[in-house]
Length: 202
Image (cartoon, rainbow, N blue to C red; front, side):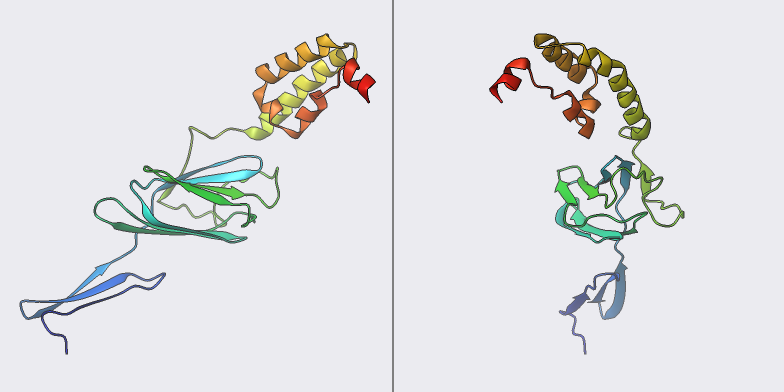
């Protein structure tokens, strides 16, 4: 028997929140479902970034698995409950995947299991998610950028072979400033040439 002073609430991980309240002698069943948080995503060579647009979030939980990840939190003054479960397009490295919370959003960095493989979409299925959109501000065709940087490297490689000492250092500085994406790539070590003095010390 439920008395007027009693109310029961139970929460399971993937089910709605049911709250039964007795009000003025009448039993009311009020159901509050967990709604997905709005999110946007973009692809990079080594990682996939997913940003959940939730302000003033708390109780943030992000669980990474090889082929999926789950996000849940409570946000706003109204304590709106959010939950998102995503079956991923490809596998990730759960141990290297991380998330960061700010007052305006929660940014998740999914480390690709196979770096250098482009993701045409975030989800395994082609079905469109109404809560998910592409982050056009951060989206870029990194495959073409990489090819472009290597093309520029090829053009300057012969110049470096014909230079010595201070000339090499000057060219290194120009290259790294002009093509910053190249300085962050594995190919950047190709420009870490030793000066004649360093060679003599060896």
